[in-house]
Length: 85
Image (tube, rainbow, N blue to C red; front, side):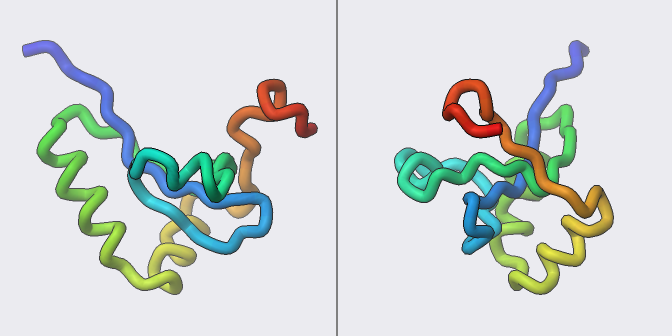
């Protein structure tokens, strides 16, 4: 069986107002969520969906703790596209 690549991630905007997990059309664009705070690689689509739902139900404090385990700094996902440095 061939492995697939799926990602669970948490993003935020320039003002760090909301740690956002998942994709809702328009939300990430409306709130300009382009800083990658955390990600996990998965090879199973059902496991990926379950993990995303789990993270969505976590408190902000719990998400912040999880984010800190990966790396303390955030990245701009598209500086060249959005004209940011």
